[in-house]
Amino acid sequence: MKALILAAGLGSRLNLDIPKPMFTIEGKPILEHNILLLKKHGIKDICITIHFRKEVIKNYFQDGKKWGVNIQYSYEEELLGTCGALRIVDWFLNNDPFLVIYGDNYTNINLTEMLSFHNKYKEIATIALFDPNKSLNSGIAGGVISLDNDFNITSFIEGRGNKDKTGYVNAGIYVLERKITDFLLEKVPSDFGKDLFPYLLEKKNKLKGYITDSFVLAIDTIDALKTSEEALKQGRIK
Picture 1 (cartoon, rainbow, N blue to C red):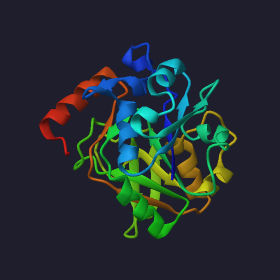
Picture 2: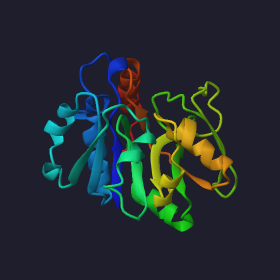
Picture 3: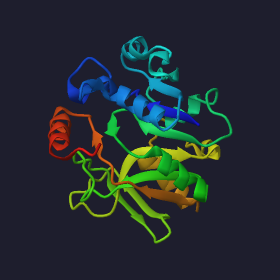
């Protein structure tokens, strides 16, 4: 299986002159944690999207051999958004399902279990979700995502916050069928949660929700970093 790590975002909210996924937590860049997670679950063919200070990421990881993986890069001259990034990675993808993971999220999700879940149903997308009241997280606002009894996503609202912590929250990890690229929106930049997934539901495509109780920590602000570090001290799941 191939994996796409989204790492093209700016680090402006962290007030650092490095890409967000290169921010360090527990002694390693978040991006390194994600690469090691993929390798742990047998996924070694990786493409990393890059934009801001791209040389920082490329110089650190190079071709990935140091980590026992094969790393290639997709450079976005202009930011394309999370799902807009799929527009320029045809050269990397084949006809098989592939995995997408947000490069500035730190998690210990069981990818092997998630892939088995996807292969059971084989819908166009399987989206990792967490219950904000149960999973260790850094207060990701996300949105409100609802499921039926067969794990079909019935509503997907993102970008409006979730202060009441109702429903499930998007963990930023997806298993996608190759045909999803046929549905990419003309709008660029575009986002999985705000644009593509609601559009797929509107077009009557089935989206499956894989519920994880793993920790999901978004490291996109200094406050989020502090919250995440404190959360890890209090209850990290190994």
